[in-house]
Image (cartoon, rainbow, N blue to C red):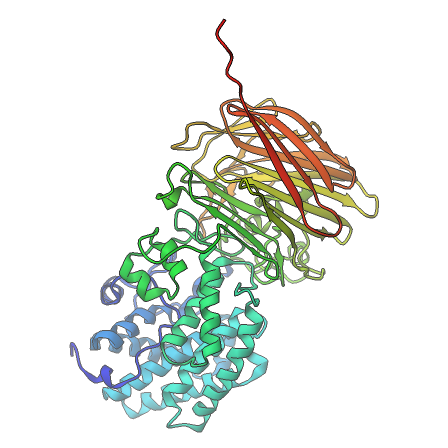
Length: 628
């Protein structure tokens, strides 16, 4: 058997977890020849014994994807597109192998696997449904195997029909419902149970979309990559005809336009929270197929398709993000050189939430400069009641613990403790005000409380292409004192030099280095740190699962402070002289001045308790010295 035409008579395979394969036929052929491989995990041969059992906690993530039947996605997709029977036959063998090990939902109890884990059931359900329908259509099953696969599919349906099994509060429930919808539609004309699954799935989907996304179209789980993943599934459901409501389709477009703000100038995704440093780049044809909106097509093709957003910045006050993106003044046609600043001010739940309140990332002149820690992976389940568990960690692997920690993000750390995520009420959004001046200065204000007692206000003052000022004010309402560090983390390819309380960073392709200095005399600069393991991990960055790369970290610190202020300047210049910095006690009014290669800069602000944020700047160029 090589190819057939039976696949054309069926509803096409729903690519609910779409991949990035340029040629799904080639990927499917490679899986049959070389095995299926996920990241840095071992390769699995689909024709031999598959490691269904969970052998060690470090393999949790891998085991989950195995029980989702992720290895079958390219096989089923390739068969659906081209009718190549060997792909379907191989998929049937894997399904038979799985059913032999798990004839009912109770069968997983002995091996600790993810066989009937909530999201795995949803992902596997629609794959099993398509496989079973296709195999019947091609007469590839004997009566015994047909009966066992149908029984298993009904077990999936009954599991998904029970609200107690659905994780409505996070994206797992979303994928459960997506799988339920696709599974049910395939057999709705043959089974009343499956017809009910479609009806129930559509009602649930509307409910979950409202819970998962804000009205601004931003995903609530603190991760642009999960925003991408959940949206791609929604688009797949729309493309498959499983979502027909016009309001839902219009909202999907809003979700995609919001996501486009989180595409970096280098076409990677902003890796806040549990986001890998994923490449979003596409050619014209792939971008047209994969994305619906002009804005997303524009950024993933580097301007070859579509058009940009109407503004150079976006505030998401309900969602808790502020993003600015501005063309390079000298190279406006080189989108990869655009200025980019994004801040996360969100705490909607513990789901994928790092201890990163008010952190931000920054790119300039073709380089990432300040970066987030990354995801690293869901490795090593935390022991219930342990110190890590009380600190809000679900996973115990040291790399994962570091990437979630406050010291791994560009924010304030108090007394070497992580900002609280467990046992505290989520504040939703901490973004309060923002402003843009006529001469191009952007400012964003955010404010939240840490440990129920410490007020923390942050202002980012951003002049794209030139400089950035990071202002932090804190106060302990219970009059306690704290040792506080303002942390910063450079991209892994950048070098950091320190001298007399200031830092210098060489940025490739720029005329001047990046100078970093405190605008106030009190904060103390740390030595540069890179790739440190003891006494605590510091100076690491994770671009993808189970990978850590050393990168420079540094901080400014205050000790024994009840109320404190940081104001750190990042400026592209050969020479930098700090002239003045004045802040009132409440941190609501201040001004700074400094001198660089071009002239003298003054920055001033006022943030009243009510009303608009007031910001401004003055710049006086150097006056050339007359020859004597």
